[in-house]
Length: 236
Figure (tube, rainbow, N blue to C red):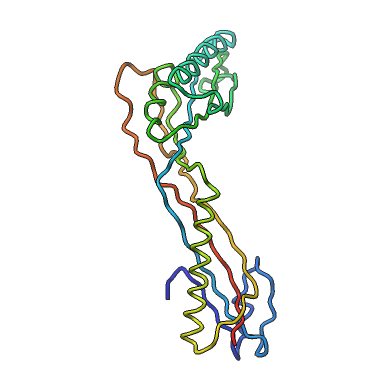
């Protein structure tokens, strides 16, 4: 039996096993010799090639007076956005994440300030390296994280859910057959879909203003969505 599955069968001794079989988040089903059930949990996942990339683009100014930091930051900010638009990025694909002017905390009792700004830029995987290069060349010295995704996220989650549901049905049918009972109607089902967490520093780099150089060699990651099914069937 697959190690990732938890399978419990309630027959004559179901009353003694019901407490262990039920999870805290699941309803407390009545299980006794007159109400026999079979419970399965199953999970599955789907992985596809990314068809969208979300770049994290940003910069920080060198420490200076508040006025100088703001003026320098404004110049860099407009240069980066101008470079992205010149490269063909639509304005609707660029979104501001954060922007702030703050005291330089790297030096105790400092009277100097830095201005920092961050954007996300949505593009295709094949243009990720090109646009990152354009932004860095324009002054984006705190850039590089890329979130790989798909345009139809809901569709990918539905595929994972379909696979998990099919696995749960197959597990229930096989378990019923091996125990010599007849699988009955579905009594209860619940599901959970989830995506693997992105590593904190995945694809993140920090660079100074770049000289003329070829773009980074960046290879898209696959996009994975997973689902888990909890199902309770009657057995006859």
